[in-house]
Length: 157
Image 1: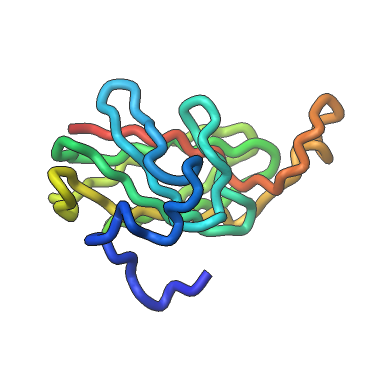
Image 2 (image 1 turned 120 degrees about the horizontal axis):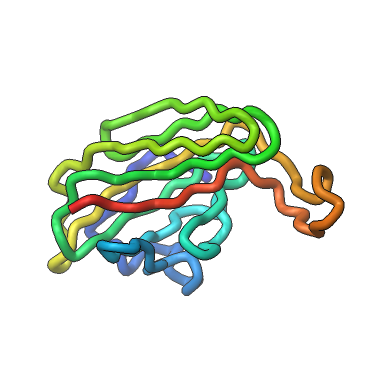
């Protein structure tokens, strides 16, 4: 995917990625509801309260909420091998090292967000530097996807 230009946040509901209903307006949040718009094919769709970033990929997404938010919290879970993960929201960045089976929580501050039709929008990304195929490590699964890191997003108003 070309990343020369930033995402046009004035067109959130009209972006070309909006052709797949499983990739846009994906509801998340246990206490405060918000929506995630996946901007590329580098993340698998929502499973329960999380999504997977593909191995050796950077998944870009938008967070859209009807209320002002202060923080985005991402719970990152590595599974098989050590992982290097880079997280970015706006100008805030954080690098994380995960041991096999380890879970870490990354909390990044949110600015005022981009105003969009009575809501606020933030641009975020998660990069997984490594990956694995579950069926090569667990004989009880037939999951053949190339997975990087499991991401559970949550927001703080």
